[in-house]
Image 1: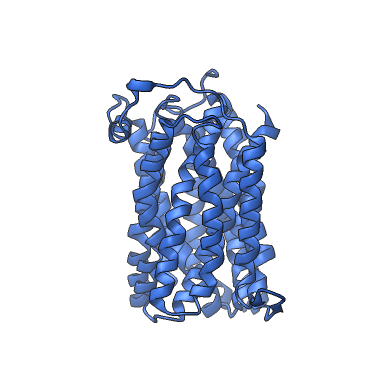
Image 2: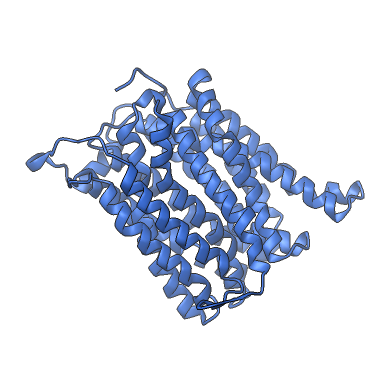
Length: 419
């Protein structure tokens, strides 16, 4: 496996890893300034997921049939990522205006980012033989983890700065987004300069229509792909039951500031970074399905510990520092398991595709993961309004346990000789 080339491909995913945690951490905070209902905040947090559900499968399958001098995925990357950077930089400005302006900014930004996501991810399986895709996906996820650490550990604390800069003026609560936008543009340029796509023969008149290509995922006699999709819907439901509300939870219950609260998602990002490559290597040794099941069982247990965290820290008389440290420790372990599940689920699905349908399989993966992200935040928002924040962790534990059972039905997707 060519690690250097894979790292350069991973620069595309670096941009997603940079935007996603900051978006998920601070968009609820901006929304909290406009609306009081947690259910409404949860509903508005599905804007990006709805657009992902609509755009990723179509744009990625479209890229399957694209042929240009610079490749079939790169044209989408070099156009859409810089536009995403501009939209991302504008979010905090819209967040100080009106709710309507902020929603328009969210829609505009996600139009570009979600269109770019599929082609960015599909770059890797286009160029890496299937027997190395778990390791390669580990490297790609490591790049996303580095970006998430930069965003949540380095940039997020800058939300607490009250600063005025020449030309830019007052950048209070804006600086992380502005710096991220610059890094996204630099990453897009480096991808264009360093990544050379494998030449794919032009299918000409034999091109498969986009919708037929997507339907082919479900028409296989072996339903392993379907079971993978159902399982990941469940584990993404667990994740998205927690993610939109974790910042508000630690601000309200652990008394953290906005900037320091961002470090909560940073714990997940750091663990994701540390364990992404080892989890790919582990799957090569013991199998992808077994690795994923271990990770899902671990996340179910950790979610239960987070559900009871407030009770047992009070019982032992923990200081606020110890309460924060133990909660962050649970999040770190959760991030390690989360990375193991996601590092190996994509390669399992790609194993069932060929080069002509790689984008379609990538797109369908996002249909199920984003469907979970659409359905879950409003549901857990209602739960929070009804019984409080802690219930989101119990919800996650149940969903992870169900996913553990479903992934046991998968029979395909393991490593096979290189193709």
